[in-house]
Amino acid sequence: MALDGIDLALTAGELVSLVGASGSGKSTLLNLIGGMDRPSSGRIIVNGRDLRGLSDAEAARYRRETVGFVFQFFNLIPTLDVLDNIALPARLAGAPASDARERAAALLDRVGLVDRRHANPDQLSGGQQQRVAVARALINDAPLVLADEPTGNLDRQTGQDVLDLLGALVEERGFTLLLATHSADAVERSTRCLRLRDGRFADES
Image 1 (tube, rainbow, N blue to C red):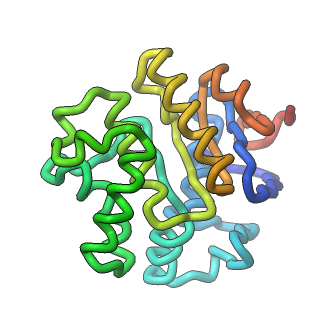
Image 2 (cartoon, helix red, strand yellow):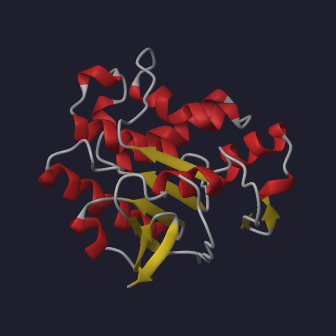
């Protein structure tokens, strides 16, 4: 979906929900901000860095160090246990294995799954897998977290639990969370809500 005339500023500590019908441009906007796609025009500036001018290597480093990602279907690596799934982005960013695993263990404790550290993803419930994915998104202390329908594959109560966790972590750590969602529960927890329609912002609340 092409975006047209988008003007968006995010500040530290915000929890911003992004809503709109399927195909309205939500995922496209997240992919652009996350450095996975490049804009054909306009500018995307995160922490003073213009993403349009980044080389492929610089874009990869930006994704590792500046952005945490949470996906609808968790995207955990099935051959790694929970602890190593969380530690992986830190290892890719160059952290020593012992440091990465220590940080991963602390995050596992924070999301309430320290007793499942050696489990594989297929041994966890959907809600537990999403908690692992949230911990993984935070392992490098990214100032920006992008969540694409993080409760879309969960029942309502489990989804509410994940939203509660995300909201608490935003308050504790002060990162910015941009959350694409169809969930009214997510919108209620947001600092503000952006509505996309046909690639443009329809209104804001």
